[in-house]
Length: 450
Image (tube, rainbow, N blue to C red; front, side, top):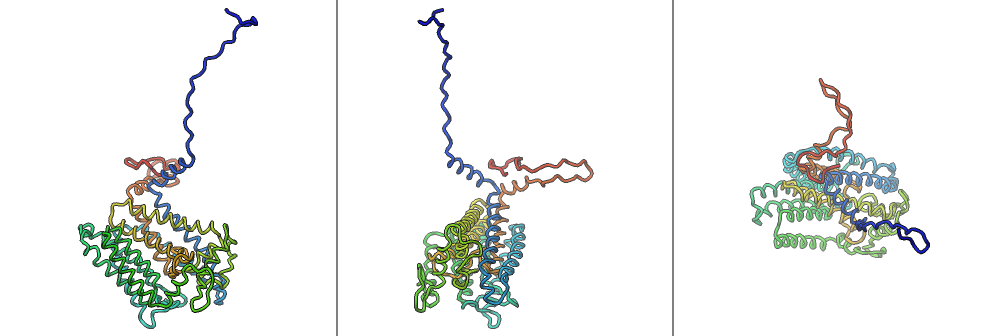
């Protein structure tokens, strides 16, 4: 054995291991996006988002109604929880309607379209009868039910137009008649203009704008050509301009667009400006629940049309962004339900409900932010008002029922087992088993359900 110069044996060096390239590190952002896409692609995601989002908006709305209406109730020599108790009663009734609508089959929904339309038209015409109709804030769109309870039939006109219009377009599509513009417009557009005329007799242009948005949503889903769509839009814009021009109140609301300080004269823009003040004083996390200053007589309609401003003052930017995120999730889930179904009625009805809720939320929030004229429409599921809450919750029940009717969602629901095992009659008792939702039915989608 050879030795080194020092006389010591040479050191045996170990053979080098081959260099194995390290796998590239995963981007945490892309991983999060991929997981979110997988979660969103699950069959029951839309079902959970619609149910959970609507309940969260309703519960948060109850909290804010209680906070924003206390001072108004005390100024009217009423208990501080007066408006909250009425809204809570309406929410309980609405929850029953939501549950009933979510369990009804699609055929029954279609069967109710004509009775709901007839009832809405009858009540809207009854509003104009002297001694029955009641005027509130200059608009005669209410019916006194006795005591302090009133009903606004125009809110039910939105639900009637959605159901009846969806059933009408679905039947015409089954007969392949929508390719002809006459069948697409008649009788949908004349019936919608009849509802708009009954609403405008009472002077409620805000509700008329929402009804117009629903009409355009149905026409767009039906595949109306651009020229036809633009023609109907032009006629509606012309009528709207005439109605605004001939009303001093509507011109005053238009003049307050973007106002940041109260003005002197017949148009003071008091409500619009103090809504901006409430939002500006909220900061990031708000002044605290119940600590609003604008609701102490400075901001009119703090618990109805301008409840979003009080939310921004008490819960800050974080609270307002949370409300916006809930409405965005609700709208996106409604679009998903409308886009994934093969039933034409479900597609039209889901699209109509989504257009209704989204358009009304945008108009209300845009008015509070000073980006749109004040239209006098409540924030869906959030503002005070039982007449607006009941049909909206029924419409949410429609979306939930449609989400359950998806074949993949129906299969995922069928896979569910009770949390505890049931005892078989006449046989041995099965052991209790927890439902992990990992079992899959044959032919289920690869995304599965957890």
